[in-house]
Image (tube, rainbow, N blue to C red; front, top):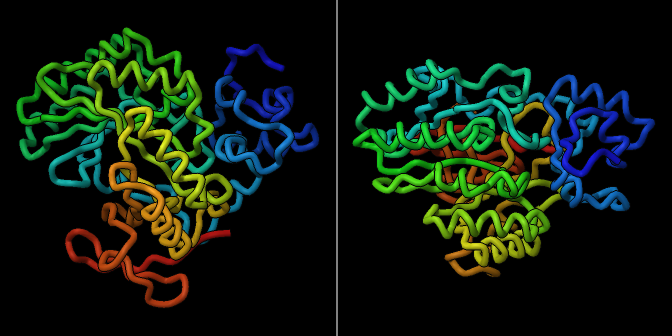
Length: 352
């Protein structure tokens, strides 16, 4: 077993940790050559080695099925590139932009919709000059009211760089909200230090962290303590989850997750339908099944704990709730999807 602090990155690491069979090392290495792999010690400790269907392992341990691409899958499933006026900025919605500051993460989810753009070798982390150019775009675009710092996971940055970025964004007069998208409180909770929390604070602006978590077992005592450090400092907390086959594709599991998040002072935000990222068909559920699960959640949860089930329309057309009139089944597995501009798209289930 590797030292407890070590992040697992190779097929050999995973085999030594008992997460893959020794006989599968070559095929797992093939997946790792195509898509980034990292499993922190904290996540590895959550995995039940005796359960072949463990929902934590399914999210993070490479699987040979990732090398099979469904015909509907595309490298940029939500159309980041087409909505990027300058490097690092995605301007899909009028009043908010994404700032993709880094291209690395503490862990790499096997279903990641940006899997073609992230990893140590991806070269997508911004230089100081590129950050300046990105923020200059925000400064000259007064309709932008919210900057969403994402990546990768932006909390891979040092507290010093987080503080600098927070100050730069907060100084833009027309920006009222700084939002950070992260998995760090779950993946590496000890990285949520007093220095990081202080770096996030902006007294004149609202600061929010949207935390990615998919299964109640991810909310360990350490993770909840990390969330408490943020909440106690006045950082608003929201949840983002992905509906994943074999992980959380039942209303009971998701209800347990949402109850636990509410108790940790994390408000519900989105339950995402799986995007059409390459090699992820085995994670997606049919939209009709997702609608059933969402309906079951509404029966189990109060409004304060219920996320919105959304589909990010392929091609960069934005998110819509997976419910009429936005999404209507035209025939089995085929849906008529209307975006926020009234344009109509066809979406087909792409599952394995």
